Image 1 (cartoon, rainbow, N blue to C red):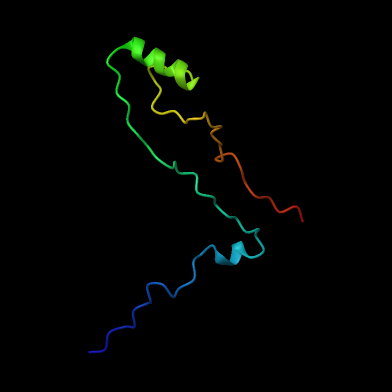
Image 2: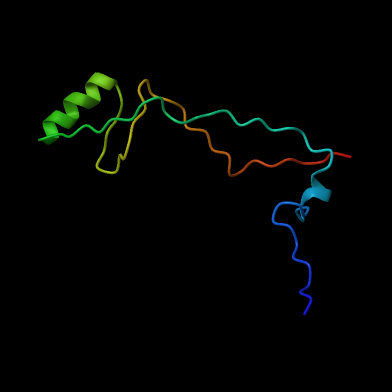
Length: 84
């Protein structure tokens, strides 16, 4: 019995490749932090003192801060448009 030939795993073209022709190159820079540390606070006063030290607002909803404070970019509303 002869089995049908199986397609290669990495040799097929992606559906989007024909539409991608002529698009500008996008180079993604590494935005991951150099180091991450966990800081634990015993009291709310300790949190407030730390916020003063790093000169940033820390609320109950704050999950992380960058030091020095970094502007967090938003890219979900960006897109490329062909003007021709």
